[in-house]
Amino acid sequence: MTGAPLTSSFSQEYPVIPSSDGSASLLATRIAFFVAGFGLAAWAPLVPLAKERLAADDRMLGLLLLCLGAGSVVAMLLTSVSNARYGSKPMILAGGLGLALILPLLTVANTFIGLGTVLFAFGASVGSIDVAMNIHAIEVERATGRPLMSGFHARYSIGEFAGSAAMTAFLSLRLDPFASTLVCSALMMLAIVSAWPRLLATGRTQRGPWFFSLHRSVLLVAALAAITFLVEGAMLDWSALLLIGRGLLAEAHGGLGFILFSIAMTVGRLGGDAAVARFGDRALIMFGTLPIVTGFVAVVAAPVAVIAMMGFPLIGLGISNIVPVLCRSAGKQKMMPVGLAIAVITTAGYAGILVGPASVGVIAHMVGLPLAFGMLGALMCLVTLSARKVMADYR
Image (tube, rainbow, N blue to C red; front, side):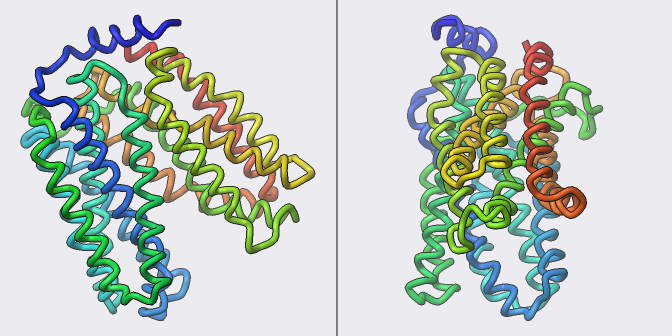
C-alpha cells in the first residue's frame, strides 16, 4: 500500500474542520496527553511514603489504590455525558487542573478515609482528562485529515517517564514531598493553562439521552483494549519477578526488562502515525503479531539473559500502537456516540490494568509465572487476529 490512499481516506472519513491554527491545536493536544501521563506517574514515587505515613499493610494499601481506580471509572463514564454538552476542551482543562491541585494533598492526607477520598478525587481527574483528551485527539485528526493518535499516546508515555523521574529526583535531593508536589503541580498548571486556548472548540455533540445501548462492536474493541492494558500492567508488575525467578538477572537489575519494554513502546508510538499513513490501521495491528509472539517466546523460554531481554522491546514495539488504533476506531464507528464509546473503551482498559496483574498472580500460583506469561502472549494473538473484524465493522 502507498501512503496517499490512506491519507486521503482519512480526509474522506473525517471531513476537515476549518481551523485557524492546526499546528497550535496539535501542540495543545500533545501537551494534554503529556500532562495526564506526568500527573499520574508523579504519584507512583509517593506510594511508599503514603504507606509509611499511614502505617498501612498491603491489604490496606490495595484498598486505597482501589479508590483511585473507582474515581477514574466513575469520571470516565460521567465525562462522556459532559462532553456531549460542553465539549472536550473544558473537560481537559478541568481534569488537568484537578491533577495539579490534588497532587499535593496526596502528601498530607494522614488518615485512611482522608487519603482514600483524595485518591478518589485524583482518580476522577485522571479519568476525566483521559476520556476528554482521547475525544479531542479524534477531533484533531478530523481537523487535519491525517492519523495522529499514536503520536499523542507517545506523549503520554513520555509524560509518565518525566513525572516519575522528576518526583524521584526531587525526593532523592531530600526535598520535602509536599514541596516536590508543589513544583510538579505548578509545571502541570502552567502547561495545561497555556494549552487550553489552543484546543479545538468543536467537541460539542448532540444532546441525546444520557443512556445508550452498548453495541457489540464497541464491546469487542473494549475487550481488546482490556487485554492490551492487562498485558501492559502485567509487564510492569511481574516482568522483574519473571527474570529474577528464572535466574537470568540479579534482583537489583530486575527492572531492566520493563525499561526496555517502555522505551520500545514509546518509540513505536512516535513512528506509529507514519506507519498508519502507509499501511493502515488493520495492517499495523496484524503486523504486530510477529514481534509479540517472538518476544514472549524469548522472555519465557530463552536460556540466557541476553536473548530473553531482547524479547521485551519486541513486545513493546508490537503492542505500541494497538490502543491508539482502538481509540481511533471508536471515532469512526456510528453505532454509539463517540464520547460514550471512548469512555467504554478506556474504562475497560483501566479494568484490565486493575484486574490483570492480580489474575496473573493467581494463574502463576497454579501453573508457574513462565506459563502465565505464555498465556499473555496467546491473549495478544487474539487481539491482533481480531483486527480484521474490528476494522471491517468501522469502515
